[in-house]
Image 1: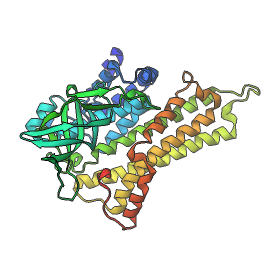
Image 2: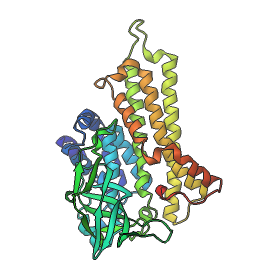
Image 3: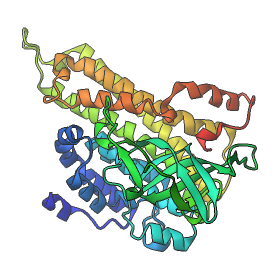
Image 4: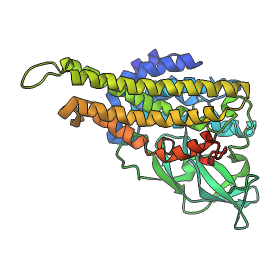
Length: 398
């Protein structure tokens, strides 16, 4: 591990971190079984990801951070995910630290995130309760999906705000939603992450420690109130944009793995090489077509969105729809590609020690249970395109 670490570039720019991510791919591949069995990344993986600079992607230039654009972040997460899906997922979530710091007063942000490689975890959706009290909030509740819970520095929890027992309503007529930040030690992490896939993400449930957790008001924020200037903080969906790198990387790795297997595999009775079979050739081409189309759609829509953010210009209805649809399509494409290749390889796919196709398929299936990958959101996008309702549900955060 130290030899690999010594070869990594100082993570000062997007190109440095992308180069580092590519350098880690083979090593992460070799650790994937260990990560899955441990149900967490483990210290050595976290150390190398930190050295590579992936957790500092959103840290601002004013702090000495790289402040990387969203399209560049997706490329980095894509490369990490080619090495291991759980590592890619945790890198994606863990780098939210820089994003959240932009919603806090400068002195508070510096205090909560004292160095560039601080690792974030937590669930932003407002399933908890925050009762207003003098100086802050008494927070209570339980949350799911604390990806990176085994190695995070800070944990966030989404809450609905109450005053004197009454739920507060914001200017848009919605329940007031605030994010509560506290160090990992302030929360109870529960050993719940026994899942089909993404097993190494340690996305455990968490809760307040039996009693209400007192969180100072200055350690809380709303996605509707960014403080820092810059394209990364203009729209709160920045926490979602980089997600799509995970399915793209998982699908790419599955194709690479399948090609490697098929180059060596022969029919047991005839001795004919599998790569000579038209059905096999068509299957590989089909997988490339599915992934290529999905990937092109992602980067086309993401590049457009990023330019609008840089220009501080609004997205059109079509552009907003493209952002959501390209992301959803990429998750679905990863599931389709991994299933296709699992079947194409045949019985060898079922042996976890022979190929990674079983794990890739399970990882893709698991990540497709996330909101952004759900086809039941298509009606919302369709209503936007048909001008039935120009406002997306708040969960989409566009």
